[in-house]
Image (tube, rainbow, N blue to C red; front, top):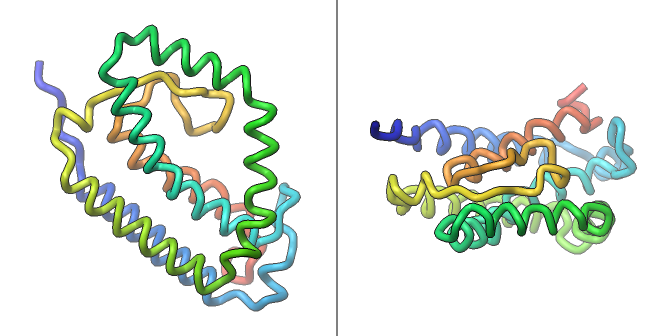
Length: 178
């Protein structure tokens, strides 16, 4: 039985919606808004926006990992996911600390530019994927992120950062989000 083709247009639309939303949030926020705490995290709105951006940036290395492990026997990816799950505490610390400095280093203008660049790269990369490659799969560390599934395909990875984005968007305390 043939696999159902991936709806690339739906993924492109999700990426564009996130890009437009990110710019609206970033450009509509005052400096005071960006320094205000988010709802339910220890980050500020600016730090959360950086974290949301970083979810898209991480897709490049995640795709490379999946391309490698997706061609190995499933046991290799399963073992790798177990090792990563065992390292959840260090990951959580790095995941928390990264946005503390990242938002400050990039600033508003460069965060917007970085978001545009990563979305353009994802559009280009998605268009160049073969249907076969979109079905490559590997095990993922499910303790690292609530949107990681036990087994994810390359197509799943293209959808992951927007799921992550939409979740964290609800935690922002920017005027547009209240």
